[in-house]
Length: 276
Image (cartoon, rainbow, N blue to C red; front, side, top):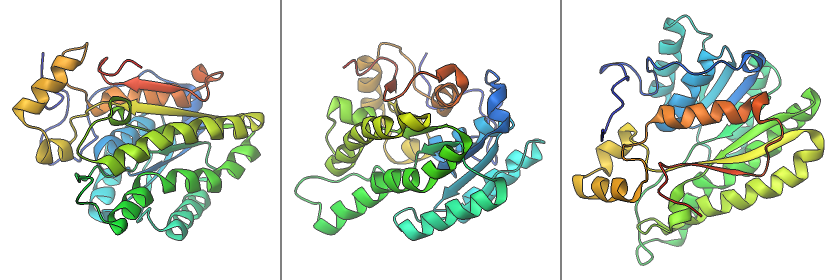
């Protein structure tokens, strides 16, 4: 079965990420404060909704204020704990640190960090300027380091925590069309391993969650076409498209006590397209 949109998703007018699919329950997540970057749309919105379903105190930042507010309200309208939201340009380290401080003041120390925000703008080797390169790294890699730096003291105070870094199988496959983005996503795997070593003695687990081509609204609007979709599915072992829920479920597992002895690892969620 191929699909460009999960049939369980609600109709139009409902924010992306809010679906009718339920997830396994992880009781310990109900008492956690989870901070998610890029939570207003795409995969991030599915992550925000999934953790809210667990009863977690969920905080998120996103570039778009209207998208973020709409998602937070839609989750509250379902009778779930309303997420704390602040619009934030994650390329600004001070703004990002201020958002983390605001979330901490609202919901207490952060026990789960999900570095998700990214932007896969297309470019070529010939076309990318030094400014464009710096902007891509400032969006797709640098915030992963500085969120961990800001939140690790919270996790130490709690006796441990979980950091989940979203990568991309574009790095594993070496896809063309956005080399700076692929570089950043490859670097995230190295950062994950380095932080797992450094933070492990404090009981902080750090893992990478690496999706394949997820059929978010942005992807469908900008990049999905019949030829490329057919090529992707031909390369996947599992012959259906990947949804945001397919990524949110593994994120819940990695954040939970069920993954208590998993750190420094890379979990691919790409339908068996990349098998390193």
